[in-house]
Amino acid sequence: MNLPLTAPALRETRPRVAVIGAGPGGLASAMQLAAAGARVTLYERDAVVGGRTRTLTAPGGYRFDLGPTFFLYPRILSEIFATCGASLEQEVELRQLDPQYRLVFEGHGTIDATPDMDRMEAEIARLCPADARGLRPFLAENRRKLEAFRPVLERAFCTPADVLGLDMLRSLRLMRPHRTVDQDLSKHFRDPRVRLAFSFQTKYLGMSPFRCPSLFTILSFLEYEHGVFHPMGGCGAVSDAMARVAESVGVDIRLEQPVERIAFAGRRAIGVEVGGRHHAADAVVVNADFAHAIPKLIPDSIRRRWTDRKIEKARYSCSTFMLYLGVEGEFPELPHHSILLAEDYRRNIRQIETGEIPDVPSLYVQHAGATDPSMAPPGHTSLYLLVPVPNLLHGADWTVEAPRYRRLALDRLKGLGITDIESRIRYERMVTPHDWREEFAVGHGATFNLSHDLGQMLCFRPGNRFAELDGVYLVGGGTHPGSGLPVIYEGARITCGLLARDLGLRPVPVGTGFSQDMTPAYGATS
Image (tube, rainbow, N blue to C red):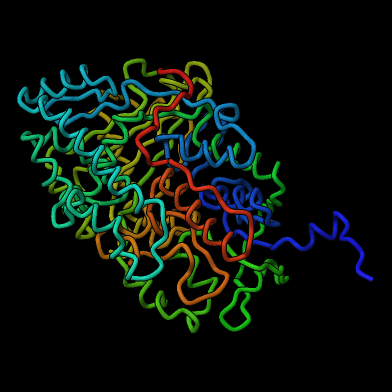
């Protein structure tokens, strides 16, 4: 006699999914898979969620973003929250910045980048009057480019044949894969400083505008079209909200539980090993850094496409040298984001690409207190300094280089009008490429993961469904479609869509995250 299943028995029939890593991709995957009906356990090696998208709390009341320091086009994550019955707007206060950032061309002028097109044209005209006429045509062209490429950003590339899809063929004319970002911008802007204002964003991918494929002019377009946002409390506030929503839909988040390896029966994943114990799973989602984690989690003998040798020989982004400074006193004239672009920017980039630590580096500074007083105690300031440097594949010894480079980074602050800072430092933390690798498990210290050249994009990048293995899926900056928070969130939708179909879960909604109807309604302009 067949008796009806009880509610607990029904729950036990749901597929089990293990997610490795509570970074943005892991959190987004866990949320969506639980909402689709899976039993999800999320394993995180650290004591907090967020991966590099976390907020550091330091003695004295200082707070810092660890990695990402701003938030772009929230619609993608808002749609993911909605699939879980939650509201991003209610969970996180996002403030749109204006100016978005200040660009300082060392010795040759500044631009306060703004989403107000009339003001932005005036800013450009101060450097090159003729180039101001190129702003709106640049935006219009990239609107078309993004719309043409949007289907590619929202689907999986499982085989080389997928590159021949109609969406790819239709987008090639606007993508112009034979041109670089800088070359593409030369159609609109004559002055190299103005081109740099719309191309330095390739550093978000750890790449040079003089080598990065021209597709990525869409990076600066998205900033001007849809705004740059600050999550109040730091970017970690977004990760914390994702964890709350994940738990509300049943995700079991286990902190300080590093996964030692994925267990296999032949070529099928059957669970994970944690603390010497086996935890069964019908599928495993890997959100850990690709170069660091895959050789440890999956035996080389069953990886035919992404072997240890291929992972080692892949091309990786640059790294970053970081200083997190708690400073006595305030900086009322310093905007939320500032970028000091080295006078000889091409030389600066060449040094990084050839493995030489730059002697006159470019510098990025976040002064979150310009918008968010919670990031430092009254009368004090939290400053985040980032200097792009080579990754560890070039062999620099940062135990030797770090003291010298700290001094250089502090000296470079003078280019932003910050002087006499050292005597006012009340808290300091340094993170070098070595620390990214050893403390934060970033392969080769390559902060932006695998580089985004044409040979490592689409089907040539690690796939959302891991090639030639059953039940293993990837999410994060090392997989398609690539790095950057909104792109990682979109990648999580692709990955979860594949997994849901494979395990017979409820369909994972595909959104309109990269569509043109993306005018956000979040927070206020600061």
